[in-house]
Image (tube, rainbow, N blue to C red; front, side):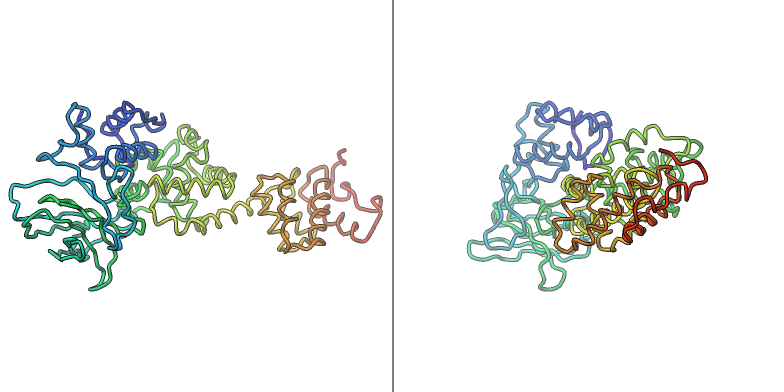
Length: 478
């Protein structure tokens, strides 16, 4: 079957045909994407490499020029002569000194934003068509775009238009000969917000897509953005967090079918939204993490839901699975999600702040859990020992970041010059007594530890300290 235009995040027969072609070209694709016919991050990466290798506009999506090249390859034709009206892909390079933002040529010699040019029979008239988008691939509407002819030592404006609601524009101009063209966008009479690379010796009809992104990369909307829009269109005013998915009610499955999406992806969106709302995170943070396979058990859990379905207990386990990963690991995961266009490029600006919130949640989780053994939460133990607030915070964070490795935790604490040695000594005493306190593991463990700590401070002999039997109704265990 002929390959059509396809964007990341898509599913179906077109994606399956694309993946089969890519595999024939030697690209390795994961079963998790091939089995679902899903245009995921690794399929997108393979498309990017194919575009670079074949001198095509590098966007990660299968646009018209890429589809033409693939179809020509499948039919055995010359890709350079494929496409409507014998369209030919031309090399495009940034003009020196024009302030083109990030418009360096790719390894294939094609700058981001350029697309296949089409010749027309009327060589005296030319048309520039295109689209203006922001760094997330969303259209920039109602914005002035001017097209210029680039000269050796100057430039000449040849036409102006306003972008429509889809960010598209079309500008006609007199074309005595092939010109070197580029476009600029303005948000005020003189303030330039975007400039395209130069299209040298432009054909009579040329497509110039460009972006306000600082890196000059023309992106499609992220998988998150596209899915969110599809889901919102089907909710009809119902709050996403109010939906139910259990043995009796299958609203998420209905929503996935109505939106033409996979259940797993809609479940990601739902769980992320609920947890993000509860913990003051961005939905994109958790969707990006889920889409990159963290936690590893999530997909299997969604495929075999308990009778209670996706409830608060299920979501809590998902969050615990996320928090079991270190800040560095989650940072790499989120960066990969941005690079794969799973979440918007603009997310990068808030990534550190989001990781900070996850750090706080991780430390909070550690402090609410029993320390090493028993039932006494770490937070209660530290408070019983009158450990200073700064040392409590430092220990909880280091303990969480090390995954509960005490050796690594103490190494981090002792390397911090802001933590007094006396406070660290009290922390050590508290933790040592906490590990020995109340062998019966009763709920009064913090009281037991507090008594032991107070008597230790006063120098009382061990025999004078209250034992477990003082607090327990039952017999003391050994």
